[in-house]
Image (spheres, one colour):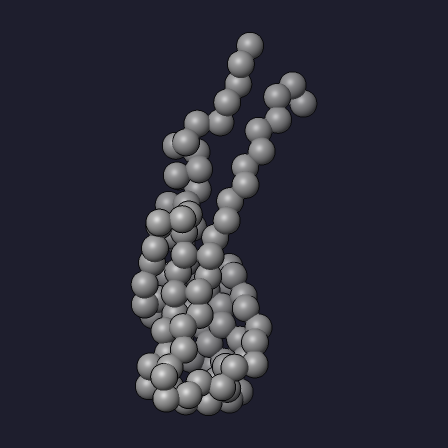
Length: 102
């Protein structure tokens, strides 16, 4: 008997992650803000981007959150946003292992 995980399973997991991470919670200079996700790419899996254009200060934490405010993906850093702005990328990489006969 041959068993193989079908592409729809991976596609469905990516859809789930995309649909449930809806915005970002950011800490700049010790203050917490919510930011919209500025761009989503599915070219190589799933990537979500948070862009800072007018904000100034030091970013110490960015988290993707769901509609209930729960954190799904957290990045800590120490980056001072300059006049060029800043973009934080959140790449999702999935590895699903199917075990047969366990």
